[in-house]
Length: 400
Image (cartoon, rainbow, N blue to C red; front, side, top):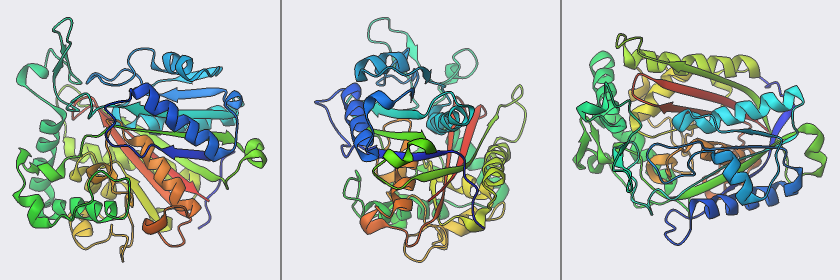
């Protein structure tokens, strides 16, 4: 099925090759990524009339309050539209949605979406508790009054969700390990990936338990990094240096725990399903039309939930789907995260923007040794959380 197209397309992308840059600030990394994306598009900085970047991050180490205004100053750009909506790891998916909507509404024609973080250099353990160096106050992504007092972290809550998924659907640690192993195989083909050393299922299962049943290699890595992309109106495409990657459809959805009640595992999948269904319906395609997927893999279980929610496999079948090799570049029905994802390539903190960079490279045929042959349609899915049962999801269909 041929996807429909909006009037918005990705014209330029850039991913900073660094994974550890103790000599650079997050501002500089982001600026270098912006320069790369602008050059990739063949456009000029003065053409940028909208700007989106990450808002305040409670873990610290990122751009801080008024991020969009401060970053625009640092970059010396003068957009007439800015946004720093905070939906955790899904934020950059929401920015792409806003960019498309703004272009369709005639508010602007050239949107710069950018991110930079020195998380590894600063020693930030993403999703855990930190203390402000000056005030001594806790800095945490969790609501203090009702959850943080019990020592909760993003990782511990994901462990709980995984336990529930295993109980309800028979998911196993060995099946999850196949996700990590596949991402590492793909990372070995990416010269910029942080971790390229071969990994086996046994390696994953014998690695330390971080939040039962999640092992070390079930959890994303921590790195520095930056990326940027330009979303433009089709009227600007004749000026661009590269062929467009069209944003054919998008969707978004949220969930919350309604006073502590509900089935978090099933509701997480349902949230993804709603976002993906919106994206599929807008683009006029379905799961069978997707050639490659970029799934935000903060944890291996996220991949399983998103696969089931998007409809690439049945409910409860995600574990068997990944263990059967369906995510692999070599022979899989749905090559997923060819760059190695957050589990092996990079994870500065809010990795959603990197999904669009890799999808664009794949659809342009620029992914070199990790290229999905003949890729024409890609899907990106991302989930962000401010506690396990308060989450947002974004989904996108991209086509060349």
